[in-house]
Image (tube, rainbow, N blue to C red; front, side, top):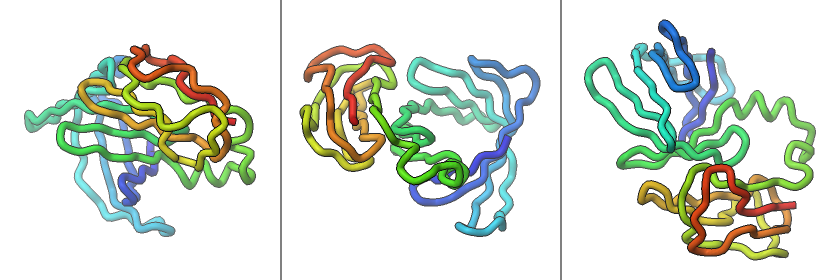
Length: 182
């Protein structure tokens, strides 16, 4: 399976192949990452790595063949957009943006009510909006602390805040409704 992934503005093609049995809890994968020039199909080749991946409550744990390993907390910000939190850096990854945008017709993709749910268990630290506020696409709405890290969740569309379903200090479980934008 090959994905186009934009990480902090840099476009890459990532090919992932399962090696042996892989399931919802992880497995072993061959991963090849290649840089792409925007608007072309030219790839700068990169070497492949074998990675053991295990899912965790907050994302995944990666173990590389050379013995290095790391944990990655993953938070979906909007469809196809992920916040990746590594030990010393936070990255935004947008998966297959061009493919999704080709299939959209104007603003219809973000039409209707959009629910912002807690991506992982945590505690609401700050609420940045109130019902009736006008918000822009990707504007910060709420900050949830998880794993001693603050995660700002953003608006999936431009619109108006219809509901704020939590208060500051509330402990939330994964999937709990936080804010509704219409």
